[in-house]
Image (cartoon, rainbow, N blue to C red; front, side):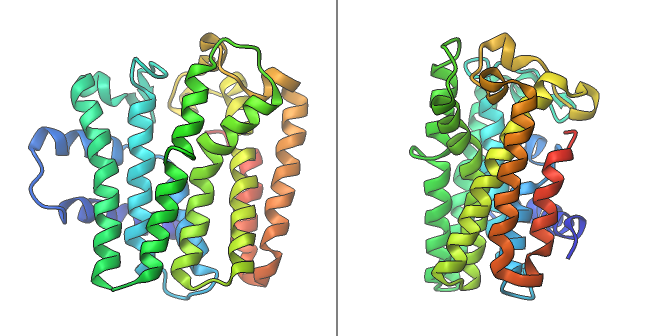
Length: 290
């Protein structure tokens, strides 16, 4: 199992998942695919498949849930970039969705991807009469919802320009970013029939990976190469965003990110050799450039 192989499975299945929903108005479908196929790391669906693979050999049964999670992530990016939110014009090296299609269609494309995701997961769970499928969909809904990612996004936009503190930034990081990296670990393990102890390990891994991921993201916004990242840098400071470096500086942020990665790696010990892939994935977070 390699990252590239899992990523390829997701990329091959995503268009089929969208097509399976039926006839979508041409403009809406084009806008949804524009962002869905714009590239990106596919980190969240890869995590879901890798979590499933900790306990099962064949990961293909988890693909509909992995693709649905990528749709949710993509919808969040479309909405994040809107003028009323982060007001960005570049994403993955391309004009953002609202720049390409206008604000109204971009909003609807995000709405469409979010609803498509749950249609896919619930249809899959119903077809297989799978309680695990329903539990996985509910977990993803919770982590992406009003006590999860949306909660973090709300504080991210409403606290712009206020005095940063570790409590505030910690809450934003935990929900805006870490919740959508914890969701695939939980969902993948639930689908694979994990025990409660294994679920706790997956949840711990996702949380610490997510916090470190956002800390590195904060650093890249300060120091990264826009050409390699495919988006503008310096946006956090310009908008008065609350970030970890704003609280403790860049050097301490690197140390804190490394400490979280160590905890993520330790959480995979329970899976023995099967946890090697996810350990390496976590460690690579500290050296990513996009």
